[in-house]
Length: 165
Image (tube, rainbow, N blue to C red; front, side, top):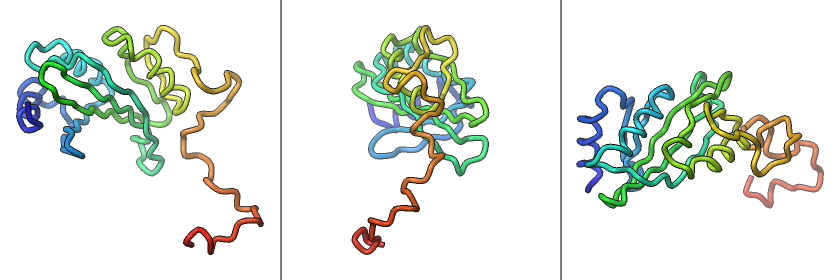
């Protein structure tokens, strides 16, 4: 199956639930609303023609410059039957970053959602054990959020000339 054939199939199957779509690095990328993400992915998994039966990755991205869309959950799905991959994005506000868990559809979502929660603070509703998985339990922040400067401005041992600045 090609990306253009997949795009046509998605448009006929999902219609207006697709917010935007584009092809990046030979992969079709589809944006859906966070409220529709679970049902869209469930439809893609159960559809006999598309059969996206493998969840490759769940990850998060922080875009602090996008008000109301600061956090993004990215799903990578694979259809073994059609030998094609699909990336689905759903954006969330920073005030309440919450989205439905996929653990009832894919058991592999369990640890990936815990990692995304751990690093970005995204809450996956109905997750069976949404606790930190890699960081210390007593951490009161999520380290992948772009809330802190990358460099210590008080350092005196660093000369910017050696770093191309």
